[in-house]
Length: 522
Image 1 (cartoon, rainbow, N blue to C red):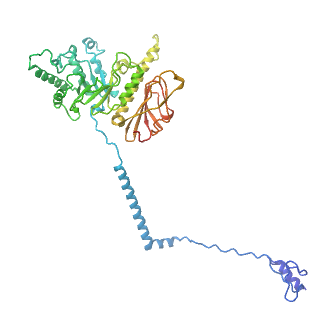
Image 2 (image 1 turned 120 degrees about the vertical axis):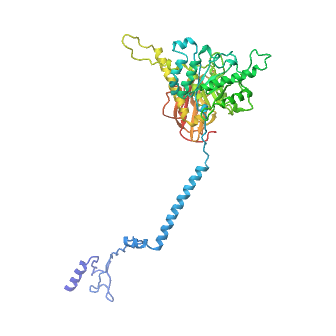
Image 3 (image 1 turned 30 degrees about the vertical axis):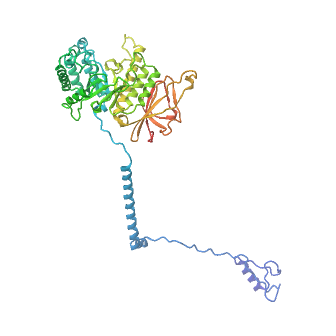
């Protein structure tokens, strides 16, 4: 009995085993063989047997440093390394060859070698050559000589001097006596000082009789003598440093025979950097053609029709649209305003001239005259009157004119797209501001727009000729970039970046925008 109790206690003390009920054959009782239900034959069986956790099986065992060094030196790894190095360099050479092929085969613009008159900004003026003005020294040629550095700083490259010769002078008098009131030394001094400053000088012979003989009937030798005298006169001015001559398309000198003779004279003075030119002012709708188009270097056209009074807004818009849709010609163009326009439209026309293909020819403007741009002091000394409001407004107007002119001239000089880039006229849709428009009034002129492009650089020029604000239609020109940066505007008040779809042009405003992205706009 004691032995049985000790065995039971030992059984209880073992973990995971519990005693079976010896007196009951219920749950957990296991009868022994032959004796069912007896106490002595009762066994204790384990109810819960914990399973042993399997050891983790390692699928990949990292190599030690010693094993890695031993394997890397084997022949297999050496071949793999050689293949990888060869594959890398082959891929690199293939990418380099592909890049070079793309660069070579891709279309790119070829820089155009421009001559001096194609890069220059012409400034037309008529100096006062009367002896009284020369004696005073405040005006005339002597005063113009003092302004040469100032004109050069504005970006002007050539001067066209008008009014130096009498319109009715004989062809024999194109040197000394043809110059009004004997101011030949002053003109020579002006040409010399201009050349020293890097400014070319072109003499205007428009409407001066250089060919047709006067009162020479019955004298067969006179025309040839006159032709020789004219050539002598041309040589005289070329020796003084004159860079060329301007004539009108209605002059007798505008003929193939005469221009061939002039060209023969020019060859005596031409150099690679100092070519003498012939400028023809176009006064008719169509320039009479010459068999040899190379005899004329520059054709100067007027944007506005000539008129005695101010040209209306509608006529200005029609004239600009006509010029923008003009087909390109072989002769290098030059643009001038021509007719009379309001001061607001003059600024718009200046932006147009500076951004059109060709060389702008700006007429003399007193706002650009240094003698007229005397600073007005805001604080006057004691005892002196304050400057009037009108004087202050005039000073602001002149400063604005100088700033706009300098901005346009310098932008044109440094931007290839404005010098010789392609030109694309853009059909435009605009939305007139409803608050300033009337349904019964005639429709205002539309916004005129064109694009100057060179490579990936594009300049968008917008012109609102009308007297009402215009907002751009978002659906206009969907292939154009959506944003750009302001280059200049007529009021010089546009700065920074802009989104085209939110842009609104004020009355008589012109804007030049440099677009951010490239694309096809034809």
